[in-house]
Each structure stands twice: as structure tokens, then as C-alpha cells.
Image (cartoon, rainbow, N blue to C red; front, side, top):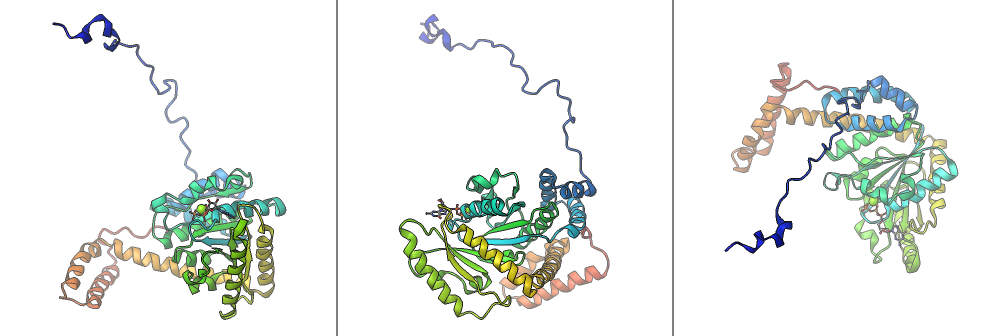
Length: 378
Ligand SMILES: Nc1nc2c(ncn2[C@@H]2O[C@H](COP(=O)(O)OP(=O)(O)OP(=O)(O)O)[C@@H](O)[C@H]2O)c(=O)[nH]1
Ligand SMILES: [Mg+2]
């Protein structure tokens, strides 16, 4: 007996030969016609100095690239931009996840642009971005107004490399943004430890966003981080949270008194505000402005920037030396062996390290890199 599915009743189930679908690629498109022309260092510099944000974005991508050839061009671009950089106010904004950084940057940024004009760049040092693919990018939705403002430039954290590497690229991006005419720079960082130090080492004002919690907020915050802050602001001072915030502010003020006076001569201030309801934002910016005026007058502004340049020179040297050591193929192949010797107690850590370093230096002195590429650019 024939299967019922083959009867005329189930005809819809049979596969009919269909019509040929057109290609999804436009056959009239000439290949290569829209390919981007590779910009030279001079093209990048020209675009940046004109304030072209498309070129600026491409230049930042170049700076972030790990390709040594890109790095050579990037360093040339940075060097040529350097004489036009430095004329901005750089503000670091830090806080634990959920403290309201994105919400606050949005309202604070709009406040600055609407009341003082100019152009604002928001950059990030986010050590977790390798995992989250740059949280600031997702955050663009939290920076609703700023992300569509014609005078703003928002750039997520470079997603590859060590914290030091990421931070260095953010610092280089600051230079490009300043050359492109951005006169206010916000550097956002997630308050999870070392990233604050990196952020502090590239900004003029370090703003710490805190939340009022259970009354023991001072416990969880490291002394070093509080000492770095030029201003502490307590967010979410709205609704029935106002009393708690004011209490926290008092606690922070009292705690700050116990610290030695900062080198800048400025007494860090503690303010409460609400980013979400846009309350107290003006006061925050007034504080930043007052600080800048204060340190410009007493010479600390220049001093801090010089110290930062010095810091980054040494940081770069350290990073390059480390990379050069670990990327040396001979060393890389010997590391596992040395580790085994140390773990099995047949060699001390010190001797193992010394042997590897001696080998490395002998290799360097011999002038042969044994397959290791000479360092190109940075
Ligand atoms: N009540 C109240 N809620 C706020 C305020 N500011 C931010 N929030 C809320 O707090 C949550 C976190 O805010 P974000 O701005 O994303 O915080 P963030 O510090 O950028 O967080 P991460 O990007 O995860 O590090 C959001 O749900 C906001 O709506 C505020 O002033 N008051
Ligand atoms: Mg955020």
C-alpha cells in the first residue's frame, strides 16, 4: 500500500524546483573600488589637526594596533601631534562597577559642553575590557546625550594587552585628541585596583565616585586611592538615600583630614550629587575648575604634568625591557625548564632568574638577536 504522504493530499510536502535566487553580491560592484586608501603619517596628522573625527578614530586604531609597522606610523603621528597637545583639562573619573560613572559622565559632559563650549573626549582604561569587549562601548547607550553630541568623541578602552599597555595607549590617545582640538578629556576607569594609579598618572584632576552604603564605606576603600583623589563625589544622593549620602560625605571629610596635606596644596573636597536626576553636577565641575585655577597659579599643574611625562618614560622602558626579555625565543624556550628546576627544589628562584638574565644579556651583547626582531617603534 502506498504511504499516505505520497497521496495528492500531501502534495505540499514535495520539494519543487524553485526559481534561481539572484546573487547576494551586487554583480556590478567593482572590487576594490571602495577600499580605503592607506593614510600616511602626514595624512593622519593633517586630518587630526583639522579636527576630522573620522581620521582621529582611525589614528587611535593605529595607536592601538599591535602590528609593529602600524606602531612605527603611530609613533610618528603622535610625535607630530605633540606640539599641538597639552592644552586641555584632563579629568580622571573612577568608581566601582555600578557607581554611576557612565550616567555621571553623560550629564557632566553635557554640562561642560553646554556651558563652556569646546569639545569633549571620553576615553577609558578598563582592564576588564578584554572580557567585556570594552564596557564603555556598551555604555554608549548610558551616555545617551553625549554619544550623539556633535562635539563629543567617545572611545572605548583598547582591548588587548596588559594594564600598563592599555593605559599607555590611552595616554597616547589623549595627545591625538588634544591635537584635534578636544579641550576637555575624561578618562574613565573601573575602580578595581591598579587601574586608578594608571589613570591618576595621566590626568590633572582625579575624581572618585563613591556610593553611600551600609555606613562602613571607608572600610572597603584603599587608603592609597583616597590619597590620590582630588575630589570625592558621592552619587545617587536622591530619594530616600539623601541622609545616607550626607552621612557618608561627613565620614569621608573626616577621614581626609587624617591624611597628610597633598603636594598640590589643594584640600580635596567631598560633594554629594545625583547623576541620574542631574542634581549637583554644576558644583562638581565648579570644583574641578577651581582646582585647575588653583594649581595653575601655584605651579603644581605644570609640575604634575612633568612628573607624569617622566613616569611614562620609565614605564615604557620597563615595558619594553620586559617584552624584549620574554619575547626572546631562547629565553622563552628555557623558561619552562627553569620553572621545573625551581619547583622541584633543584635551583633557587634567584639563581634561575640570574641564569636566564645572564643568558639574555650575553645574547644582547653578542649583537645577535637569534631570530628576535629588533624593536621597531614602540
Ligand atoms: N538612584 C540613582 N541611580 C543612579 C544614579 N546614577 C546612576 N544610577 C543607576 O546606577 C546604575 C549603574 O549606573 P552606571 O552609570 O551604568 O554605572 P557605571 O559606574 O558606569 O557602571 P559600570 O559601567 O558597570 O562600571 C544604573 O542602573 C543607573 O541608572 C543616580 O544618581 N541615582
Ligand atoms: Mg559604565
